[in-house]
Image (cartoon, rainbow, N blue to C red):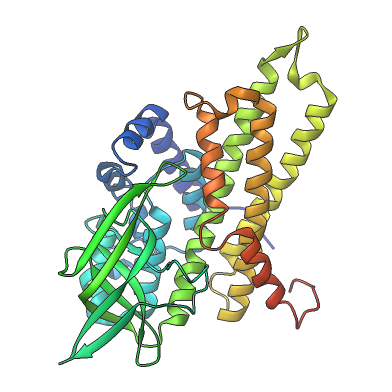
Amino acid sequence: MDFNFSDEQEQLRDAVRKWVDRSYTFERRHGIVKAGGFDRAAYNELAELGLTGLYVPEEHGGMGMGPVEAMVVLEELGRGIVLEPLGASLAASGVLGAYGPDAVKAQWLPKIASGEALVVLAHQERKARYRLDQSEASATQAGGNWKLSGAKSVVPAGDQADAFLVPAQANGKIALFLVERSAQGVTTRGYPTVDEGRAAEVNFRDAPATLIAADGLPALEHAVDIAIACTCAEGVGAIDKTMELTAEYLNTRKQFGVTLATFQALRHRMADMKMQQELARSMSYYASLKLNAPAEERRRALARAKYQLGVSTRFVGQNSVQLHGGIGVTDEYVGSHYFRKLTQLELVYGDTLFQLGEVSERMTDTAGVFA
């Protein structure tokens, strides 16, 4: 299999990296963190680059690209620990494009592509424990209109988003709805996350909702798988930068008159981190290439990829802190912010222990052999 990127993909990577280096500096990011962890101006800059329309078809004003292009972009945003939730937006636009009614596509996809609207997935509930087939939120229909009630937790930029994709029980099964944040009956409570981004608790009380899919579980699973693939790519970018920072520190910091990089034990530690870095990268490639596979095959692949990402982010992040010493956790040093990001990525869309269970449940037919 050819893992070389096309010229178009390399140009896309270069454009995003230049934006991160020039426009999303650590100083700007620090200001965004102080302001709450989300900056609409920065998100609009991503839209100007066309990134919010990666998964939006060209007939709706998007770029009509696919998972590999999204992976390239998210790696670079991960390198810059960009706070704005592009991955969540891509998951929403991908699902709307694949499952939404034509009228909903025509209304929302152009606005998502242009950056006018930020639509994110609001699916987590306190009692669900990452299970997608568990939802206490409910929706009822009266006179052809839907009303949705329930509560969702840790919604990316939930108090800043323009609309949500919300799973809820309807007619005995999980359906998927679109609910606008400005709709009557919607309330949000925003807060900062571990990685200094922004999330919110979102409550719905008889909120007007638009039906996306009556049998919503397949669409929800697809949305989460897209988000996992984006998370894996973002994690690879953050790991890459963490490795660079750690290597630079070991090559400049001196102990007993010599640089730390001359100590064999520390070199061995870096070699182990490098192994986890490449494992995360290979599984991120695997995840992106499997996004268009049949549902069961896709779900198995994404569980495996997210499990490996969790192992790699934890190992690289914690060992980077150990190799840096005390400076590795100080707010003034950029490396501590990468550690926060790696810690957060291990937890979202199913933590490592949960994904290990998913892998175990889905490997009975292959007896442990990855197909």
